[in-house]
Amino acid sequence: MSLSNNNDENGEQDLSDGWSKVEDEGQSSSLSDDITRQSLNVTGESDKSVRNQSTSYLSSRANSWINLLGVRNKPDPLTDWDNLYNLKNQSLLRKDCQKLIQQRSNISSRWTVPEIESLMTLYCKRRNVGYEQDKGWLEILGKLLEFPFDKCNLFNVFWAITTKYIPRSPKMFDLLRLLMQYHDPQLCSFLDSFKIQASEFTSFWLRTLLCVNMDDDLCNLLWDRYFEKGDPFLIFFVSLAFVQSVKDEILLLTERDKILNLLKDIPSKMTRDDLTDLLEICSVHLNLTPISVREV
Image (cartoon, rainbow, N blue to C red; front, side, top):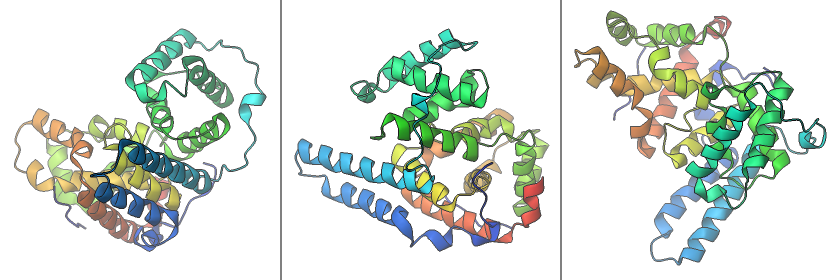
């Protein structure tokens, strides 16, 4: 996969900053180094040593995200709620929590269905919304459950991610198309000719911040940069870079379904080198994009 270079509440960073400035800063870089060292040193080590190394890595990243998301020492919301499980879709939520435990068997020793249901019930009540399956909430929570968060930090990290970084604007797909039209008009025109809408292949990317579509380690690295930058608009630039990464392949296709399938599979085929290139492309796009685009 090649990447080509073409022309609510916590505040937002300046688009002109780019990601290149953070590559050598903060805990994100050290975390990346930790992963690299682990991949080089695992061979020949005992299972116990590998598990200890993995636990240390997860703990380090969890602490980093707590800091980057600004939730350290936040109050524990679980101590102040009515403990009533009376959401409109409460039974559906309970079933989905059970499925989550079954799908991620490695978390069943630390988390129970009632605990996860409590977190999600409180979350929905705090936001004054009903539970909906297609929001991507449990996918994100499931990823976070892999980390050694306590209940308080788990809820606050989950809240910060889903309320700040998940796009909710009805114009979000218009924004993505605008970015593509600005930076790669040829690719935009090609997709338009097949009447392919951005919503058809990026909806799940945006709802889950790619935590389902990408390899876990690569997604962790991406989230490091994402939270470090603190800019909710970055997911759009990441999505644009994803599409550009398969531009040459897309332009050779003549069937709409094949184009869509190729687009949907992009994140799952990403490698570490691809991700490095992607971040560089995002930095270029950020620097070249007018700040007024945020107003779309």
